[in-house]
Image 1 (tube, helix red, strand yellow):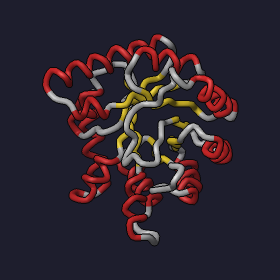
Image 2 (tube, rainbow, N blue to C red):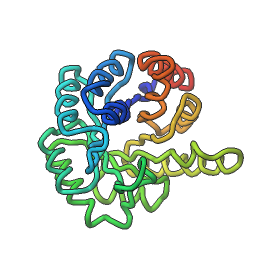
Image 3 (spheres, rainbow, N blue to C red):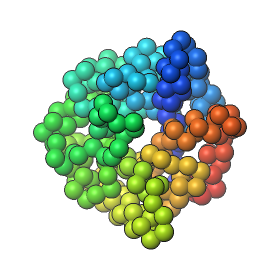
Length: 245
């Protein structure tokens, strides 16, 4: 029997609400604690170069919380010297390398590993040598999967935003694309994760892809928390995933 698909909860947008007014409320570390108690298997946080939501102090506190709870922290980060130094200082369970542009509202697509192997490979190698699991956030495309394996990643997280924004035949075509990329990744020895834009329905649909071992979900859950509470939103997501499995 295979293990249940893991649920990573991204708490970035708790920090976004906090930073909109300043001060200390709502506290993303408290949100992470609630998430773990509600059934999250790990915490994801994106320390952006402009610190628009999660801050350096948050990462330090989240690292301590996850270590105490015995749960993994997945640090999303740009491929920069500054972020590499921060990751090496905190040594999270995993570092997910993502594309990042200052003007974007949210991550708009996958990392172009195929076009940036020379830049990404040394960062991936430094993280791996420090005992940090290396994940790459990529589009479900053969050339990106192959490049991820070539630079030494252990995990690929497929960008599901396009799938979530489509409907009808276009949605089905994208699902096939995700399915084929997942099979290719597994064949190359890469663990498969998925995330971006997922809700109760689309998260459950991702579990029809046999190779998917983890979903990372943030914005939807924080939005749901406004109406039903974070604990209830995560428990409902966990239940939807378990039912689909």
